Image 1 (tube, rainbow, N blue to C red):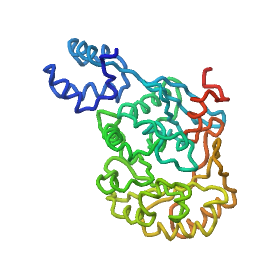
Image 2: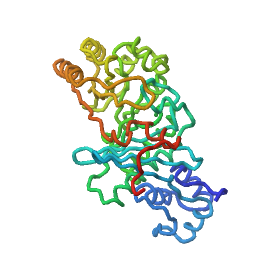
Image 3: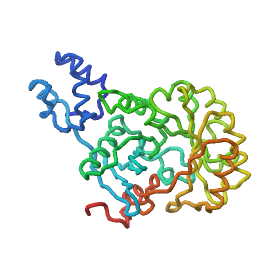
Image 4: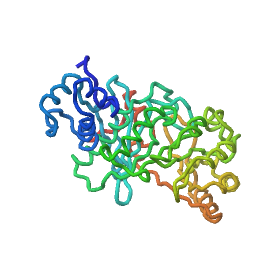
Length: 358
């Protein structure tokens, strides 16, 4: 198998180029693409609209292999966290988050993260490597397969790049993954159903229209540059917070589209009414909505969850100022579903939980 390539890591254009070398027409690439990404097929032999010769040629040059999966299912809700072991034995995680009538899938874009935000379990791991396009997209195939095999009635409807890593620091592969998500012969997701979350990488935001394939979410987590430097020193060093907000005003938006501002509420640190006022001043002129996320304490992270009264006061003030606010509820706490928590314990052999079906 070592002389073959996992076809999941082959782009549509690369597959088209390969088919030219064996005298196959370009449209065959779309058929193969549909079998892999739309139907989740793992066997070239069952791709029935391809000739036997083409199926044999594919088998000579490629294999199809998903990462090994260990699922952990919350006993408190329907949250499912999947630990994925990649070909090089590195571990990543992806999380199925239950909503009222569907699942949202939170996917990773890197193994670890180079930004080291002080409240993030993934940041404490450091950066190992970027994920390839196929490794990003295989998370969706695995989640869809999990839903199907377990006969869960909730469909997978939304994709958020909010897992391990900073998506814009892996932009070529993330961009290719977004194109596949949007492709009618791929996953065929509407841009309204896909969100890319970033701390704000200036040169990518300036050069690329991310909103072509997805909505944009900006993680700021502080209403001032000074506090952001304390919480997110590497991210804050890339661009001053006020300049980042100005930059967002020039990012092209579709009709009625808004940027999502993500703000983790950390007890006693950024959850006061004065900080709510500062946040309002910062973003009031930006077409945006705000996601407030109560901090979910992780192992060896020196912060605490906010008090409920502070959460409600913060939220109510922003509503009174005319901002659209969504208060995200913590889910999957019993399986350490905050990004990086379970992966860190799993890799160290310290997971106290039993994986599903263990």
